[in-house]
Length: 306
Length: 159
Image 1 (cartoon, chains in turn red, blue):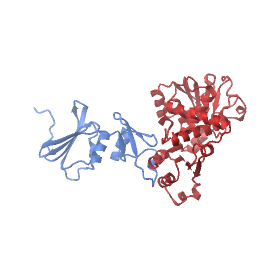
Image 2 (tube, chains in turn cyan, purple):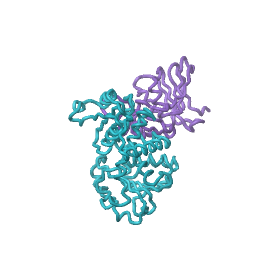
Image 3 (spheres, chains in turn green, purple):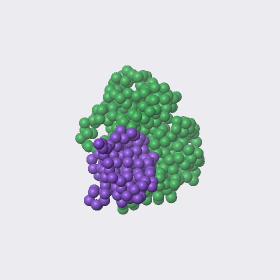
Image 4 (spheres, helix red, strand yellow):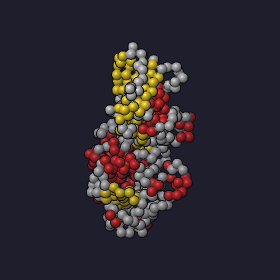
């Protein structure tokens, strides 16, 4: 995996993902024991986030620091040369000459692939437009593995904005690399999964069903992946008004769910996942966010050192 | 009685045969020919073809095709053959080939694709996932283009 660009989750094989997860287990236990690591001492990571981020950026930076490496961060637009009109290509060339790996998030789709074509060093996609968020999907799948011991043979519900949400999209793509029992795609019709994803699920032989009702399937689920409606990606704000608040996961909505149902959310949440779920055994989303560190540590180690 | 349509031979130029029926005028547009250039042009449409059922043929006197034009023709008429004519004889016959990757010829339909951003040194690039029916997938953002999209873009008109 050394030198590999991380652009899409399907750019990885199941074996490679399991290698990342095994490595993440090691990182996780090292963190639990409070061990300080020097695996990436002398390495520099550049974070170039052209879109807002809390967890992704901070967890990449923390992961690098925990491995003994360091990072540089592209300043906000008004404080950098981008305010003078510097394009993405030139920005990436500069970062490539300063750092050993670049993590990029951009509103434009394909920005990470383009950056990877320019940069000599590996590029990690921290989210591009409505398309891909591969490291989030790794964390999500890893959380399922930690919570239930396996990713295979489970019934999944992916709820929310399946049209514009890159985390949901990448999670579904990630599931296609494993052998889920069934995947329910739960969304208002306006936010239904795009055709290319459905075609891929069919091609991979993954059983799926589209529905707009959580209630009708909640009792079957082992994992419920909840996502936010991506307000910022709607081409037409009136379309957003029509669907906002159209689903809500609360303890009321989880009536009839299996006792060991794992609820995930890539966060941030708005109002689609209520606080009354937080203190129940279903709530795995804060642990999921915490797993961002060992998983990203594992990935950085494998990409930079093999 | 003669029942077949006869089109006279050309002395020097190009014959594009086995064009999908109904697309000869699109081929002329790709070649940038309107008829006003004064060249001898024969357009035969919807004639019987063993391979295609029906086909179109375009003959143009005094014109040799450029590589980019051949690539564009391949996208709208993937079975076409191009015959180079010198002194009434076919001196070269080439079957067009739809390449695995189409670079720089078409524009991605997604305005939020990196290839549509101003001031970025990047060309559009599509993977050909199917030739018939034509299905192209943007390598950067995954947006799909179909046959009608390609025809519209390459000919600047309705499909």
